[in-house]
Amino acid sequence: MDRNFLFAIALSFVVLTGWTMYERKMHPTPVGTSSAGDASEPHSRDERAEGAPTTLPSAPAPEPRSEARKAADAVPQVVAKGLEERIRIRTDLYDAELSSHGGGLTRFELLRYDDPSRAGRPQVDLVTAGHGDVVLATAFGALGLGDLSRAGYEVERPNPLTVVFTRKQGGIQIRKTYLFKADDYLFRLRLEVDNGSDHIVEPTFRVAWPAVRQESADYSDYMAAAFTDGDVVREVISSSRSFFGMGGKGFDKEKLISSDVEWAGVMTRYFVAAIFPEVPAESRTRFDPIVPGKRVGIEIEQHKTAIPPGQHIDREYRIYLGPKEPVRLGAVGAHFDQAIRGGWFPSLTAFFTRLLTETHKIIPNYGVAIILITIVVRLLMAPLMARQMRSMKRMSALQPKVKELQAKYPDDKQKQSEAMMSVYKEAGVNPLAMMTGCLPMFLQMPVFLGFYYALQGAIQLRQQPFVGWINDLSMPETLFVLPRLHLPVRVLPLLMGGAMVLQQKMTPSSMDPNQARMMMTVMPVMFTFMFYQFASGLVLYWLVSTLLGILQQVVINRNKS
Image (cartoon, rainbow, N blue to C red):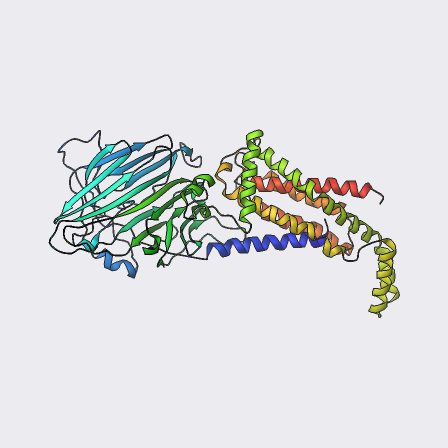
């Protein structure tokens, strides 16, 4: 592996880091869903006491709102009185709960995924609303009945997977119907308005999803997202800092996506909560950073529709709350599979994710699967790498003659060049070897990026152990932490840095000895620093690839040809 190769790799990492930061800053959209009212104490359908009085806590202090939301906030809010009914929906996939106050979700726990970074390893809950917020709230302020996002609803349950919330007021009837599935994270929400009054009403169908960042490893990368105009718009709510100290700050300005919203919601690296409007062309969404870096509101709003007296109108939404499993997301449609980051080479990322998963079926250890795939990749590239290594070896052997020619013709560059070309030709060395030596790098970088995004975003790799202390290949590994420095000691990147030093010592070089010594220090240190914060699976891949490169270099160096 020559020095140009290493320089190109280093540059590629810088580009990768810059691209990651650029992606995080590309698009924003906010929506406020903070409710300024009271919430009554919950009573489940099975546990509530009939007629028992409910004491309402004092309303939380109002939070700053954007100018775009002041008009909506000015609508008087209808606060539910009396008992709150909680309705539980439990399947093999999730344990959910809804409330009669606002007719929204209060909990949606994924039974197949727990959170080891939190005490007691609770199930992952995708409902993370703040105090006073209603998830999947519907205000219907334009009906002239007040803000109904926290109003009380009557409850019906036609079957175990269907819940109907009904409210009658001023001659108008509103129904919110939830239709769940036992074997899917996708469910439907149908909103209906019957105009029994004597005048035309023009309701705005607006569904809100308030979200609060949690203190959890899963929320180290948390963002609002929407799909519109053929692309995913992302706004970072909070993220772990990159190696250059960037990327930790969330967006702080409201963003409106005015039309053609196919889905919108919030997501972490491995989980997503998204709302799909029935008619994307009539929909718009708003991201509202209520508390930047901590609390956001997402709304999907559809155009106002006039309803004459005696008429009826309905709108339906699909809701997905679950893991970023490629098959499930692809089955939803609406380009939902793009919620999984594919990077520069999405097809390659999908290929490696699938390859890792299929290999894991045969060998039930993703770390071993990564090693096997790395060996296959190196074998496929071995002929190109061997050709480059042999060229570099021959060029290194010619350096004494090259220096003689440089000393012989110090002031005549043309004669110097002609004489050097003659030497190269006699030795059978390609003078463009330094350039062609980068070809293996260009072939390897897509593989690296494919692995990078596969290991960073594939739900299959979450919490997958390798050996010993390496208990999650999708996260950086830590053997122990230095007490006072709070510095994690990570074995794989340190081994990788050492392997790079050895590789450079073994690689024939045409560089000046002082430059070579400097590179032997600078490059391994830089790579170790960068890889120190990468997923352990990715570092494992690069370490094994480096070791195989050393092995190939040993074979080339021992070969006299």
